[in-house]
Image (cartoon, rainbow, N blue to C red; front, side):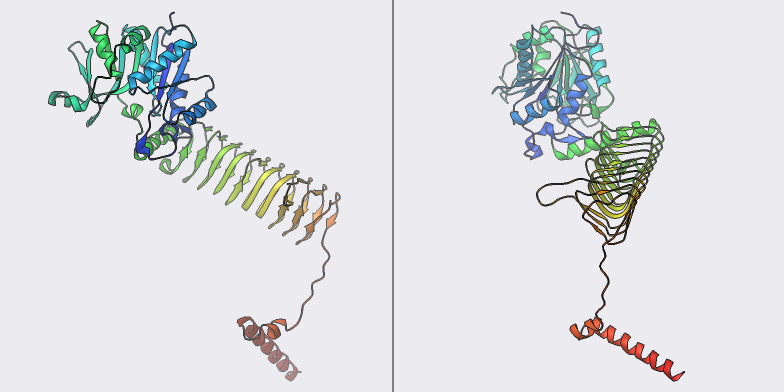
Length: 493
């Protein structure tokens, strides 16, 4: 079987490591950056190559990782690494797993890792092209570091071919001076890989099968073994602990914010703005400091978001203004205004030129075009029509202790402040209500809803019932002042 140019027959993603330095109950490859787990980043990049086969090799917390991978890529083949340790064995079982599903894999096999989240598809395509055009048996992706530390060194001959990959602990002083390091990412000829893996042993200090031994065996068999050197070391950086995870997260976010800015988005302070890889933003959007855009959030042109705003899975229309707001799984139509200090919970839909104002919380609520919920209110399980205004300090009382109930408010409604809507109730078009009204039954169109309870004042209650308090003393002083004013007025008559 032959493969299309620069399209691998298979990609094997290694995700079996324990990741003990994370010190976490969560498997290392499942730790997130930029809105995806590290392994999801790795698989997404692999999928963009359009390989015929894709395997993810798992072992540590196998069930968690397998379930996680299957949730975002159900077509990926999950392969279990057995008790034989090492990257060579991981690749071997991955290849055997793919061979078992289909006829033997032929052509180019790419090997990458589930904890290398910044690797680009473009880089893998260059690796494959370099590998296939050179008719190489093994091609390793490398980079140069000023301080290569514990990384394996790439040893080349005068022709530029890779003759060995030497671990730092085994390297001579001359080899330690080499700055080109092994990323652990490879392109292999499947036949050479399959044959060489059967000859890789665990006869070493760690008792592991190393994938680097494949290169040495292929070299001994007379095959071409080369390396492709890339400038960007971050692409091949892995995260072994939370410090490295944070460093990769910052670098990824730096790239994402730069990409959006070059696409016409104004980001006032990129360092305080965090954007997931799955977020889409149109040109001429302004993002103010302290804003986090997550999930499938989409921001349409002309909108201003922030400062201090978090949106997750929120669809924002054109020319919207959102300030100091937290929202999730919601929709905001064009020319609407949200915040400051608003909380949009799932199921919120705000219409064109609508408003959700200061200290307002919404959930499962549809607010029609031109309607406003301006201040200090809670709207849950309600549909509000067009061009209606809900007064300050209003609460839609949607929960009876067992079930939630839905209410409706019609078009061109004017509701007073401090209203309680005891669901389920319906307020008709053009209706009004007085301040402090508790609405327990439907309000007909055009009606005024009020609660008739005349105000009653009990004179001198504080003086008599709260004697000795500051309030009583203030009342007595006011009373005395009033008596003095009355006496003076009498003398003047």
